[in-house]
Image 1 (tube, helix red, strand yellow):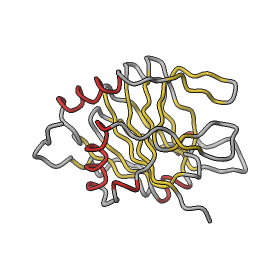
Image 2 (cartoon, one colour; image 1 turned 180 degrees about the vertical axis):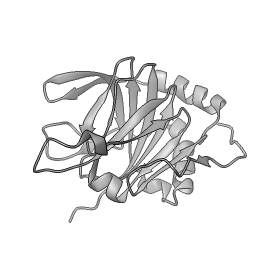
Image 3 (cartoon, one colour; image 1 turned 90 degrees about the vertical axis):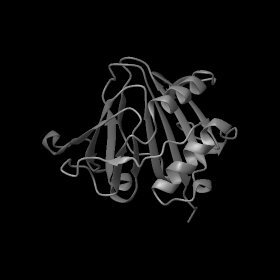
Image 4 (cartoon, helix red, strand yellow; image 1 turned 45 degrees about the vertical axis):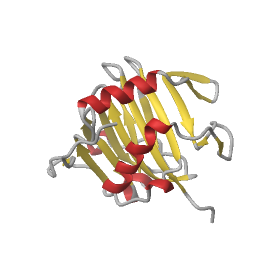
Length: 199
């Protein structure tokens, strides 16, 4: 994959996002995006399952995988070679050892696919996301385990542009939930995660 000689652009600092969330546009070029999508479309993606529910999204996991309803994560196939360079670049951008990003998820969002309110499972630490193919809106609200209700006036949101990258750590990872409304166009994401050490 050719390297583009430019730095990703940090998004408009006037946008409101949770502490610990960092977003950059233009992480990869259009040519790189096209190449990555082509590689992803050659993978074996399977429908996302949440207990007995089958979602519209299709996914593949590498390094580690998690099945809803189970208490532990299990090993998964190694990350495909075509993702290694983008993982290295992501680690360098956020000052993270690329080798510590040991879990990867590929997600295909067909038209109309959403992700409901959630936090990533506690087995994983820092989360890096790379957007491909189409824009989508990412929403945030503070998580309160005592109540399933929240003030919709307090929702923060950000438009994730194609070829952009974000980091979730700290408060954005621990005390905020996030969701994605149904997408209007075919979209892919590459999710990279560190493994959290057991206490």
